[in-house]
Length: 166
Image 1 (cartoon, rainbow, N blue to C red):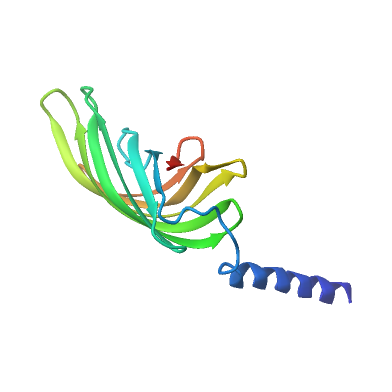
Image 2 (image 1 turned 180 degrees about the horizontal axis):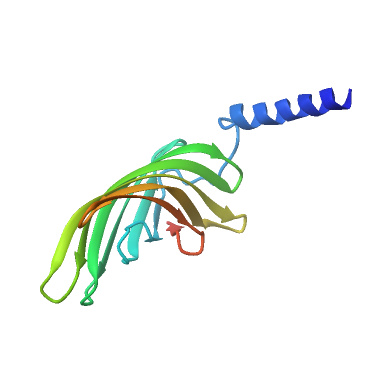
């Protein structure tokens, strides 16, 4: 009897988690512009980023970063987000991005390429600081500078992304 009750409770909780995203309330950011930073580019350039949530389930954004050092470069791209699940102060999403890369290998030598990412992530805020979004992402990255590479990506929330919503 206890096993049957545990199974029923587990099925109820799982069903609630799967079928309730339309009724949960996330931090209201529809139409708000988020400005911050991201570590999206595979080259060592931290990028300025923006994000605009267009509806409950869709957001778009972009990033651009530059480093003028001898071993620097630049990166820029666009990104789309599809919200999967909302909690009161956490949004879980899937995203895809397409970016251009340029990496300096010396004062007169640079190489260009591209980066395509598919990631899942979470952006959260605190109850008293709902204008700040802190996030983390994981997934796979396809990029080419010298050779075509496929790599897994994972960013902890301290370095992944940060947005301040106006």
